[in-house]
Image 1 (cartoon, rainbow, N blue to C red):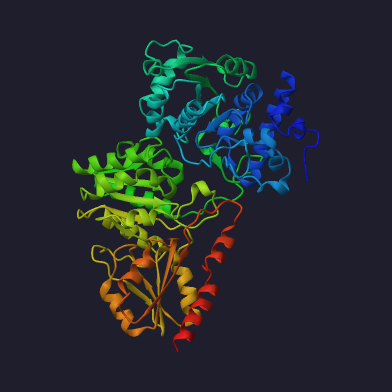
Image 2 (image 1 turned 180 degrees about the horizontal axis):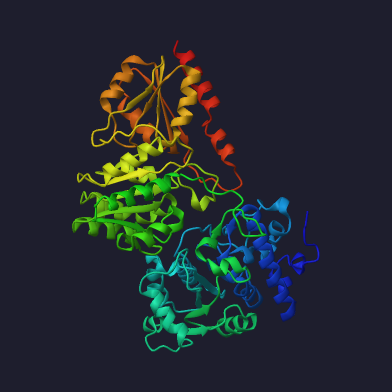
Length: 586
């Protein structure tokens, strides 16, 4: 049910409806948009600060330009809630029953006003430049704009994009949404350059954008609808590349978001009365265990440790760590490539680097994982978060890290089944010097207590349950799922410890004593653990059946339960499938 039938926003089905409004009416729409963002995020969670800060800029764009003919590319697209509301999708904020009907990022399958499915950072300038080049070649006349900011300029691709955009021969507007923040505080030299421009109202002599050849304009109040409309009208018909630097306020309209920008970049459901979370985090999580383990190692005297993070300290519970151990912490900005290459250099010079990487963002650093770390066989330690099947946007699936890392030479990819085992693996990894080690932090629930085996250099699968006919190898956080299935089947259960190092002695033993070997992994199947086991056992008289996720992008319209059911990853389905296999062999 529409909770706000009186809102002007109900009348806006496309930007054409916005263009007939007065300035005062558009300001009313801005207030309505902010109220709806806060109301919906409180109910279901989502990006808060970025969207509250970009409301006027979005309204001004759709008032001045003519989308979808004119093209706007939103970097990351986590700040497009206002854009979606103005392009026929306001119902997904007005009606609580429709909260799940619209995706949190731009999606061309959802609307002609969205041109890309985007959820990762720093891509907008390159994408927009490519569109401008195509327009020039094909004789088009549409206006092309990229909106980048909220930390995205600390990603390397943004600089590559600027380098090529500067030589564009036609219309191209690059809007720098400068809210002085990334997810955490901005880091590095770029924030210094932007501050000089803000402090001088865009008049600083050392202007990096002008130095690269861009025309440059500055808007001091990016939350003034009049100012941004005027700026857009000024640059709309330019015939060359322009940087429009707009100073905005992240979190505008919600006091708690202004007081704590990092905590309100993205929020879980919260209580509007006092901003408190509706579902507080558990006392002990895999990420908290990881940070505690590193802190304890430093306290014990391992002074050469450096925790490296790419702009998301809150996602790894690193906020307290960076305050307590500032000399042992480095945030490189939204630049996974930089984080991995820097870690390689730190290790080569005698330090011990611990990378905190998110699965879905790690793919940006694939070349560094291979060329700079694996090729040089450097003992970098990497803790991978979010690596597993979850009900996320298709831009943020986390089922590819295991395939990327475990198929590179020299990398060892460990997968703990309990929090105690995770801690033991980290302590071993930061001491060993044989090569790079990645550890897949559990995503699904795991027990706190369990094996604390200290040696992982020579993997020996751990037998956790004795059974008959079938043996289950349950990798990492699939262990409890494997235990349920093993108990129902009276099967043996093993903890493989590693996603890519096979215990061939154990596998040979299993092939001799069991009819079926089952592998479970919280990962895409193609190129994964199960295929490695099946490949090794291909010439032996045993059937290997692997369970994981098919090679696909899932989206927010699918619940975790739906994804698991479709991939036969429930205990009941595994049991039924194994029973069918066993009956066919007998």
